[in-house]
Length: 366
Image 1 (cartoon, rainbow, N blue to C red):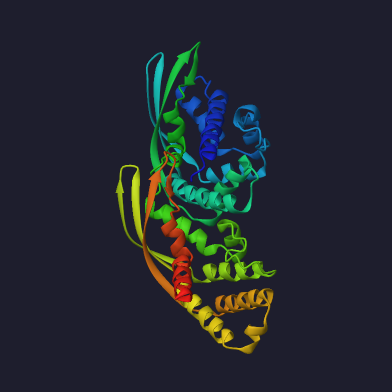
Image 2 (image 1 turned 90 degrees about the vertical axis):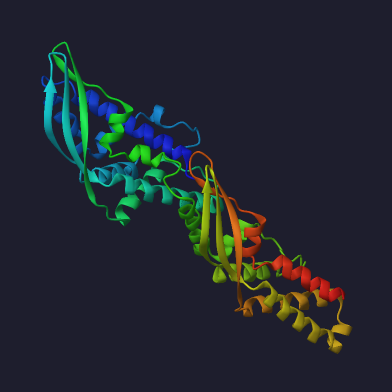
């Protein structure tokens, strides 16, 4: 579920930024000055500089995406490098080549990458439910900015070596993907790692998102439209009461997990409304009604409306929950782990209501 579009644009963004930085700062008359010029530019990044570094044509691959690099992107990049510091520790040089060794200090960007990927997955879940609008570059970078604002990260220091070549009396830094990733503390490699998050973490993100969904969002997610086929005018109220039960009762606990290659299985205890309890209450109300003279005189439409009102009442009054053990398969698609939304998982979320309904219908026939 991790967005490949975001990964590609993020990688491309830093490639462009650092290529531009190197082109601007590397042509100096000593190896140390060339390196210092580049690292100073990183320290001094501002909104105008960031925008100037980004090629709109190259950055945006999708014709449906927003092509402006806005304040969200610039702010996220500035926050990312807010604590960026460096120290040149040593230099070795010949007439034509040199290596400048440095120590760079910044946020623990691998920890940042993990939190960003968690947000990307949660955001992709939200986007699938609430909107068909394509997500822009700025939206993705706002996720990075929000992550940096919401969390505190330790400062870490790591070594970075710059290889330089002297051409026409000018020292030029030899750029590479490895150097660009080292400058950001391995962030690019980490955010592009399909195994950065564990299956348990991705499952928890998914379930935590489910826990935060309101009744209306559950209606959309499950595509509920007169789920009980009542045929009455107020069927939406019944659907909403059912969705409210899902919302209010859902909880989960991971009991165990197993991973083999790109496949994993999570065994979890899913707490949900007790479908049997609801249907038993509903059945009792029907039996009581069936014993009245009103039910004998009522038309088919009146009986349907009465039955629907009993079901609505049973749903609204339900307080009982049930815990179901389910095993959920997961797979790694080369970008991240994905939860397979199986019938077993859906049934547990719905309080095993289909089983309860089948039992109710069987008892009614008997």
